[in-house]
Length: 80
Image (tube, rainbow, N blue to C red; front, side, top):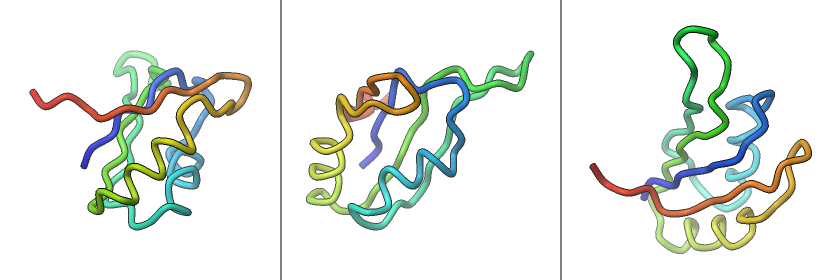
């Protein structure tokens, strides 16, 4: 299942994002969305985890957590 992680500090790295979700289980992918012009983070990213139970635990624990001064929001990513 793919999760959308919003309101990340622009300084947050993919490695830091991955570290938030790894304690809950296997992470298939973890990507920050980058601005093509500046090369900086746009402040959101996606995390993909295969197990429903792991996803639920990660969402509950990380949603509203303060990271680098920002309260992040974690929710199920919408499919296109």
